[in-house]
Image (tube, rainbow, N blue to C red):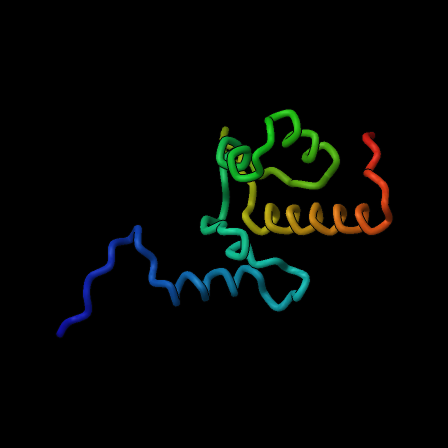
Length: 108
């Protein structure tokens, strides 16, 4: 039986996995965005707002602090999935440290 034709919109799971592994490289500090359900390489501002469940002001405050780095592609602003995953890990780690120390993080 011949192999079934796959649409360009339905990536081969092995090929997609290899692509993410290649992007991550050998750096163990990189986070796999698939662990957070992030399947695309980049996300628009609107998609990032939806993914993080935050408002535009909070998103750009994170950019101003240096927590996230936007990428400009023409007039479009994008955020890399790996940056978003690393951002979520840092937030989780900071929350765990604050909780174990028994105090809340101060607003700056």
